[in-house]
Amino acid sequence: MKKTLQIASVVFTAAMATGCANTTQLQADVDALKAQMSTVSAEAAEANERSKAAEATANRAEKTANDTNSKLNRMFKKSMMK
Figure 1 (cartoon, rainbow, N blue to C red):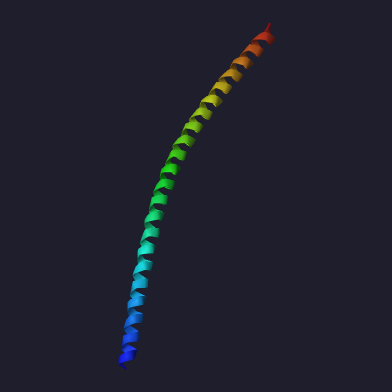
Figure 2 (tube, helix red, strand yellow; figure 1 turned 180 degrees about the horizontal axis):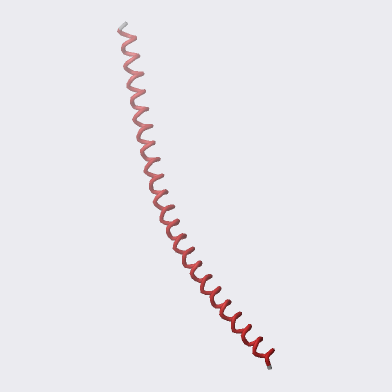
């Protein structure tokens, strides 16, 4: 009986030590994931800002193209009237 208790206490202590090590490793993994999530979030925000800038540039280019097309149409109509 005494030997069984000793073995049980050794097994319990080993299980607790392993459990603590696993908990520590899990916490380290969670911290690493939080850091990665922070980085990804910052990169996503930067990509969003760049996409907004690209959209604004495309809108300006479209407006310029439309203005140029209108001018060309007016010039063509004027030349056809002569």
